[in-house]
Image (cartoon, rainbow, N blue to C red; front, side):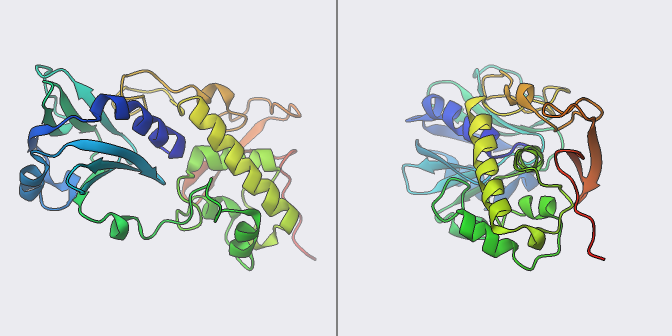
Length: 281
């Protein structure tokens, strides 16, 4: 969290606020939040930069600058990139402040300090490990079937692997597996071509719905929960079929939703709609 729909919402919401805005000065209170370059050079290089392009790769925000450099932002679990008034107080969870030429401030908050920022001339090395985008032509049923072939790892674990497909995380993996009727512990290589095609379609459907609903907000404090840059929550949590619905009735069959742990992540599924095949005798 945040995953692809939340990051896509961030980019879309920030674009009209930042397009054409110039950074007049910056300050950093926790240097490790800056991955590249070092904090001192980040402050020097970001000053005078103007935001002109806005994109996303997987869970990374890509803020293109007039100079040709790119500000890459990964929110990780609890990061927030927001604009605030120029006289807004700075709290202990705010680690980067960029003053803008319209008097506003662009700030990066992160209560758990897992998020990272990069300021680079070429984003390729930072993003080189990512697999195809879920809506790209390269991510198709044949690709998925080929990448799953012979793999013994649970399918849920592979869906979380950003090298397989970029942007899918815990929420949307659970929801996609439910739509495809696939148990999260199924060995990935046991899926046949039809099941791989169903999973491919389900991934695209749940991500499309997640984007349409502006992502998922899961409750908790505002500093630890996803919200849009303006502070509004996402809405996809109202559409969850299985995620965080342990013990509640399955929307298809009424059986209680089960929770297990896969790849160190809480995993939710319907044991009736997503049966686990018996091991071969």
